[in-house]
Image (cartoon, rainbow, N blue to C red; front, top):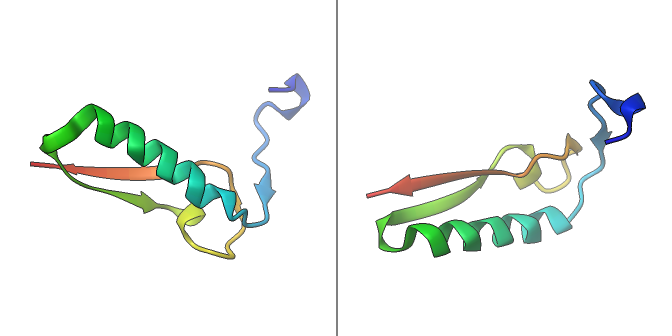
Length: 64
């Protein structure tokens, strides 16, 4: 991170690529948790199409 940007939150327009990034994260969680996993959900503002947001892909996992 550029030292000038430290402490600054940058809000950006919605990016359809966020869904693909979540799917990559979900695949890693499923690979690690296997049968213990009930589900993985994309949460937060990156999950809402069209919503501007600071870039942070959120995921919630449920386990048995």
